Image (cartoon, rainbow, N blue to C red):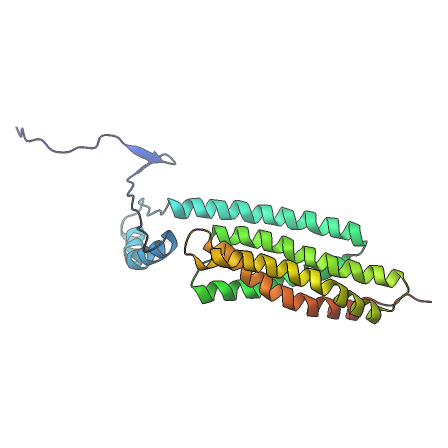
Amino acid sequence: MDNTLSSSVESITRIDQKRSVTLKVGADQTTNAAKLLQEFNTRTAEYQKNLAETSPGYEFIIGGVNDENAKSITSLLIAMAFGMIFVVGTIVLQFNSYKQSLFVLAPIPLSLIGVFFGLTLTGSVLSFPSLIGLVALFGMVINNSIVLIDKMNVNRTTGMTIYEAIVDAGKSRFEPIFLTSVTTIMGNIPLALIPGTWQPLAITLVAGLTTSGILSLIVIPILYALFVKEPKK
């Protein structure tokens, strides 16, 4: 009989009714969870592949921060989809036009150009904070579009032609759109320069507003001039 003492399993943990062994690790301040996970997947890619082929019944699952981020991103994307539906419905009721509601949404892809460029330039990733920044950015971009298009419609009710309405709206609405964008950008620059959890959010707002603020004043008048027709006499 062997009387030596050795360690044993104190408890059996299960996930989805399957026995599991959990390994926990942490990251210091020199890196972040996203970069750590990317390097970990690169180094264990061959092991994960061999495990699936040679050991049926075993699974290699990555959870923790990555799993929580995935769930948060999924719920946020669903909320964004419903939010866009409500926004489009409100715009259609306000302008009584599906065409003009598309004009309002046109600057959103333009803002994404700046967002992805800014994240790439700073080496940031599209994370949960940056998605929160996208939600705030879309609201600001749509607000600027509504202000501009509404002024064009008001000008047309006074008897202006389409081109006169566009020029006057561009002149009168340039200053408020420019100032609101610049003040938001300047307020977020300090946060964008400081490494941390919320840095991607600030970068998203700064880069997105810079791009959309410039391009929306060009694209929206062009779309309005091309697709809005003068009423028949």
